[in-house]
Image (tube, rainbow, N blue to C red; front, side, top):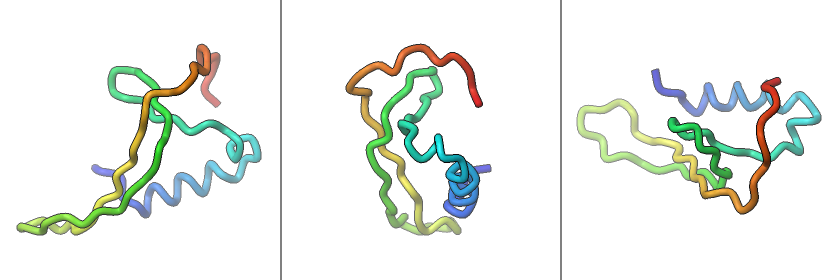
Length: 75
């Protein structure tokens, strides 16, 4: 099931309750394990041909400008 804007909003609100998250660097993990920096987000409209999804959010990323080092644990 694809993640909707409503689900993304709910997840982000839960994360943002922790103070440490508010200053954390935002990265996107690609399927091959590479980490890219978050660059932006766009709302775009779809051409609707028999599809109920009229809009989508596109998260943009870019190669990191500097390495963060190895991840030691997930919290």
